[in-house]
Image (cartoon, rainbow, N blue to C red; front, side, top):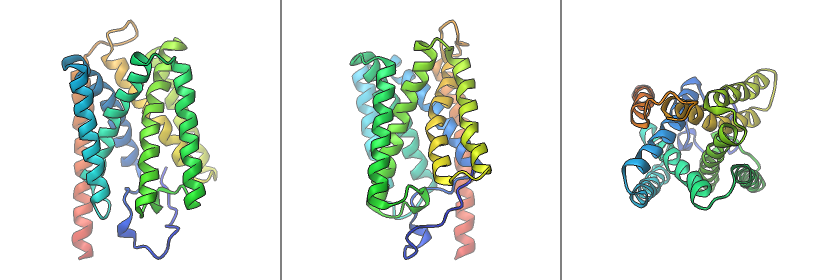
Length: 258
């Protein structure tokens, strides 16, 4: 689904918007990044001391967001690097809540869902819009990335909840989330508010991508046991190629504009 809404603040130039246009490529890269983040997080924790894996991911996560906030406008590689690091570190945060703190998946899913609703509510109360094409001030960008981080954590525990607690397994879970993401897409075509459609679909991309890559990588009975490293690579290669495609398009557009 593509959000064609215009900027609420007409006084701000469109070049200041800090997020990409919502196109088909956006959704494909988003799903690939969520799946890659899931398996790469598992790969790091398995092959490195957990403290080093989490600490390193935290540092990379913070640096990527600092770079994103410091850039004056949307830059393809800076933005998607931040998304990838959110995917990796968000997985680790959700796993810590589950495996270290020991909060049951159903409860943690409800907690993250409540946090998401609270942040979206505060964002709307403050800015009177949740349209991602109005991300042109530091405060709006802060709300945006806070929302993104929570959606990744929520999607991780929600995917684990359906697969493990509800005993659906990874493959059936991915089918459930694929059907779920189709609902706002179809509703948007029938007139659903594009902002509501966007965030409804955005939340589901995380458990969809994570369930698919978990199914491919997992050594559980419901997994194909291809390994977290190989599945991470299989998701990362097309993701990087598509990001490079966006970067080339953006470069050509700037050349034409000049």
